[in-house]
Length: 209
Image (cartoon, rainbow, N blue to C red; front, side, top):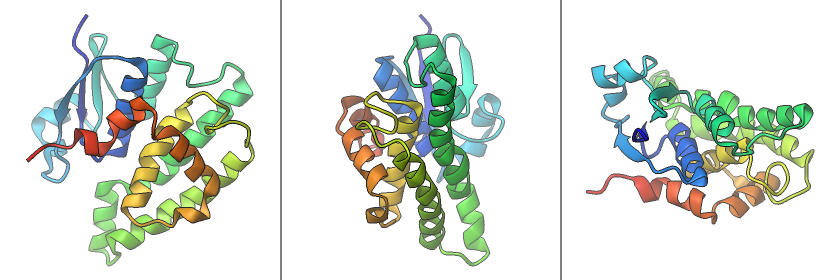
């Protein structure tokens, strides 16, 4: 079997999602750090594997994949992970929750976007707090529509949960008042002790020294 390699950055929420997914599946993988603060994402090596100049890139099954949601769905489809319900309506519901994070919140709070905002006069903390809280307000409503179960959609981990925990980490990092979002906070607190989530936490993978 070809080695599975994740090109990631320890604080990237997109890479954090993929780390969780690989851990849930029990897939052995090796990390190759791409330091976003040093601009390594724009270097020739990273652009060759990820022309968008982003992380993560996952080398698996003899191919390279980019974009965390595409990677997660590939893993779900090829490993029968069960992160998306079989029923089409339920599947669309879980995707909507995941997209509320990965498509609506994350791109606005991406490092390169936030840095540009600060160049125009915003503060990094104020920018992050505003857009994470705005996105969480809508997500809280989606989650409240489906209150049964410990997690975002029932008692099994779904795509939405894999996206939620990294975004809650970012929210805490930037001082977002999570008391406003009791449902999503409770879900995150139920997920975070799971071994696959613990092992993927940025504090567990950050470079030493």
